[in-house]
Length: 294
Image (cartoon, rainbow, N blue to C red; front, side, top):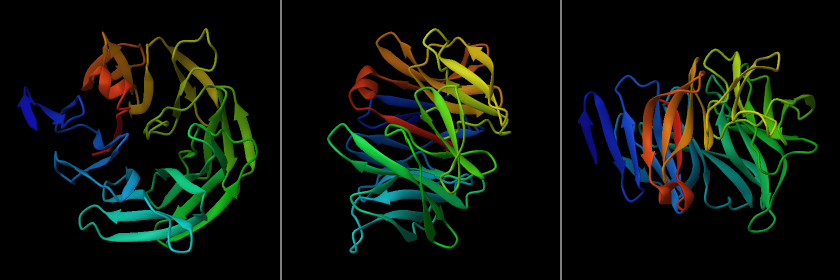
C-alpha cells in the first residue's frame, strides 16, 4: 500500500510495522527485505514486494538487472547452490559451490556486477557458526572458486574492496584485507564494517565503519586505500547500513520506543528519514531492509 505527499511516496510494507519514504530520484532504495520467516523481493519498477519462499539472502546487482541468492535446499549431490535470477524474466541459473553442511552465505556483488563473493559458513549450534573463508562466483562463466583464510570472524562476512582485487572482513574492531587466494594482506584497527551493501562510498575513497574503541563515537570515516581514520562522527547509530552518497551515510536510529532509517551528514545531523520502523519490527521481527541502486 502506498501514498504520495509532497513528492515523497510512502510505502507500507504489509504486516511489518515498516513504512518507506521514497523520492523518484533516490539513488538507493529498498529492493528487498527480510524477516525471520522469509524474504520479500521488489519487482523491477514496482512498489510491490513478493515473498520468495524457495530462496533466501537475495541481493540485487549494481545495475539492478539481476538478483543473486541462495537455494533453500542443497543440490542432489549435496552441494550448496548460488541462484542467479534475471530480474525482468525471472529466468534462473545455478552455480554449485561448497559441499554441505557448509553454505555460501552473505553474497555481495563486485562493483562491475560480474562476480559475487560469499562467506563459507557452517552452523555449529543454534547460536554459533564456523567460517572457513570465502567463495567467488563468476556470473558469466557460472563457476566458483574457494579461498580459505586463517582466524576468520564467525559473525562477519566478506565484501569487495573498490577495485575487486581483494576482499575485507572484520574481527574485534579490525578490518582484515585478504587477497583473492585467501592470503592476509593487512589488518587495520579502524572499526567494523556496516551491515548494509555499501561500506565504501561511490568514489571508493571512503570506508564507513563503527569506530574501534569504546570511548569513540559510533561512526568513523576511513580514507581508502591508505586505511587511516580521517573523521569521527557523533551519531547515535543502532546500526550502520552504509553510504548514501559521498557525503552522507544511512543508519538506523532510535526515536522514542520506535526506530527510523535516516540519511545523515558527516556532521552527524540527519537530513532525511527513509523509513519508520516500530519497536516490534526492529527488536522482535528483526526486519532487514536492503538498500541498493534503484
